Image (cartoon, rainbow, N blue to C red; front, side, top):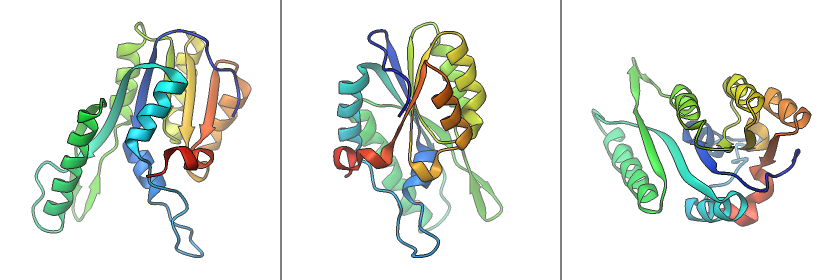
Length: 187
């Protein structure tokens, strides 16, 4: 961890679920064991409420809107149910359609998150961002430079060194490794 926690101000939470999902599914290349844990999103909401008192929780997710065959149909139904659950417990779920490119799928929500950071910039003083993706470095630098306090959350093995270094060197930027919150957040 680095930096100081702000004492007041309005806080917005932005969760990059694609980044979080792949971090959770990450396996140790030598043993094949999962390196991270499943997060309980009720516990996460309650933790964020206690730590940051956010005015909103934005959860950015990809969704397969038109799965063609099994097992994708069943996976899409389970994922849609999960997203409805999140909406029911207070998250604003922002969905982006999963794109098929041949046999591969692609979807990330970096642009949507960055656009919303700009959209809400005049309404919030503090940004809580769940991602380890170095693509966010430019946005983090920008919002920190205009006086926003930024708190980053990521798993250690998925946290870009550029984001970590920036957080360590700038007084209005902080980070917390999710690895140390396992007892608090694990499902």
